Length: 158
Image 1: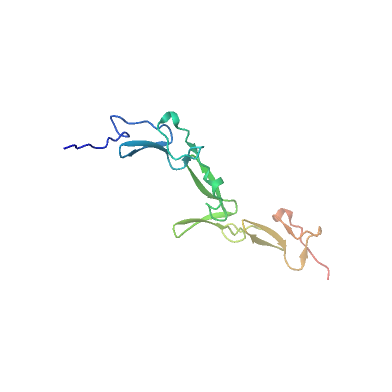
Image 2: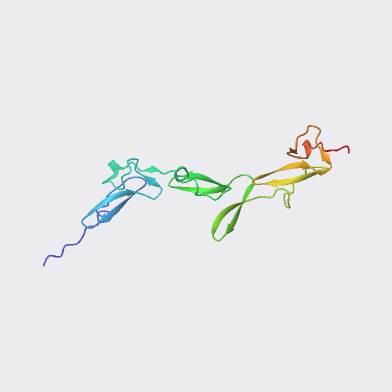
């Protein structure tokens, strides 16, 4: 009676080396190497035989899929992975176990931007601007300005 068993070439004492950013995968009667998640062969092939054939390179997930992060989020490629961070003017809000970047209302507490006398803070997506209160205007004719130091809102003549 013949009782042959598969030899795991990926385990000691053989322990095939696939090189950096790759794993050895035992198969029935053989083995192959494949790049770890987040890495790929430039050729597009999925497997190779040993470390001398290894050319596993980082995959830029952010470049491949522009919708990895929610609106207001910024995708940052990392070796073998990526992270999402919130763009300026947005803050992290965890809901339903998903990282969302929501607009920060710079015009409300705790930030509450001061635009100065006779002016109002106007929140916008990812930012804000100041505008003269009704009945007031900038001599320049501009409709908005960025902060209280730029405020020159003056009463309009009726």
